[in-house]
Image (cartoon, rainbow, N blue to C red):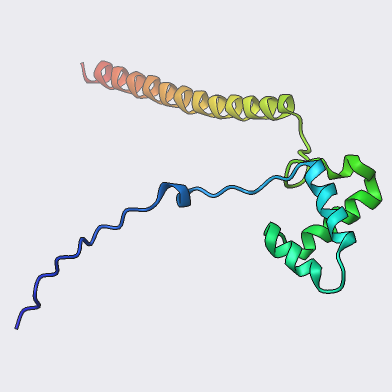
Length: 132
């Protein structure tokens, strides 16, 4: 017995707003104000503050640590991940050197093919001369 046809549309249309999420960035002023509010909190109020601001306790700890170690400048946004070891110029030079090496190998292969063709042609000429 076949199943009855459903009237529901099997296609799911994603909401564009939910498709691409990005990390939140916090200004130095915001971080300082949250730390001041957290310091003013009584027993049990800190969790409410963090939930209201949609923050994690480890974010607050990290901000406090950065403030203690580096001062207000430590709270400024920095690029995620380790600092690049090479400058843009060095990366470009490396890229060009790799391309140069690739092209040298390509020329070697082509030169080898040409040399092989010359030898084959010389053998054919030698064979024809011996034949006649």
